[in-house]
Length: 448
Ligand code: PFF
Ligand code: NA
Image (cartoon, rainbow, N blue to C red; front, side, top):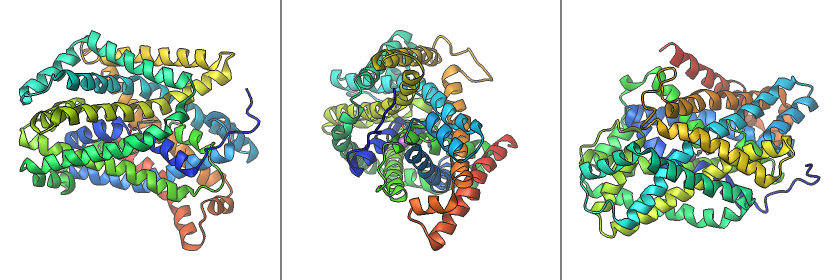
């Protein structure tokens, strides 16, 4: 199906909302805090922030730029730009691995989206009210131990994603994103306020921002970089696909700054809301994926109006997860739709069911398949590790190398409205700092 006139975003605001809807999700509220907890706190946070600024920002801009110039889905966009410039056709791999990454990530992302759904219902039925740390922990372990429960919620979550993508109403979500995003921020501020009443806020602050550089290892640095890619939805062709709908007038650097500030702000806010609760209740910093599911119900269980606030929070979290999940399914569906005679609806179903099936293996990692290890990792961890730590950074690396080295330098500078010192800075960062940063992190982690 050829699109003669590739549609464009109705306005710049629409685009920002779509990009933010993809970026802000479980990565900020679920994943970031538990990674900070596991990786020793501030040192991880600072490396993460550095990765966002020096690697994430230029790659985000590079992906949008490729998408806008290619005016097509990521694979075709890369193929077209490489052909036009007389570069190796192998650049198309950047687009291909993006689609693969999206597919793999969605499979386990949906499992956690399911947890969020389950906790939304739990808030309604009062599962958490009056529970202490042990009780809340019990609810969480109980959920993990039940393959049927996990399967049920994973299925509901995927059905929602499939339903929305099949109807092609993704853009209809703009309005919702516009209201949900501020609501989410407000609720996080409420949680932050609660954290301040626990008497452990200072402890949380220094845990997150006073680095113990001894905690830095190759592994921590790689985890921080992987999280930077994951949280900004980079290296998956998603931002490229969004860029293809961008009009010429949109300022890429300025928009990237907006999206990044929002995404980073929400992640930091989540950390600041969660760690006071961890310290106040003597919970384990190493709780892993369960961290927010044991801390937040405790907080809601102990504050005035907590039942309602908890319900709103998990609803909003589910919604944020949905908008990210939709952005993950889109490129996969687009790929199937373009390469097979299937209609959009059938292509969505086929892709969605494939993702769902892989997700079952991921959710069984928490129970029946807990001992089934590949390279020492269960399926869930393997999917997460392989995508965040390898696939996304490599794909993002491809994108920035292509923009910095293969596209015409002057026209890129012009497209970014850069000249003089700004242009030189861009060239240095895009050609050397960001790519070498990725490579250095890989080497550092390989060599310990
Ligand atoms: N950026 C999303 C988050 O932080 O939750 C997750 C995600 C969405 C990752 C889309 C990758 C992606 F392509
Ligand atoms: Na994010």
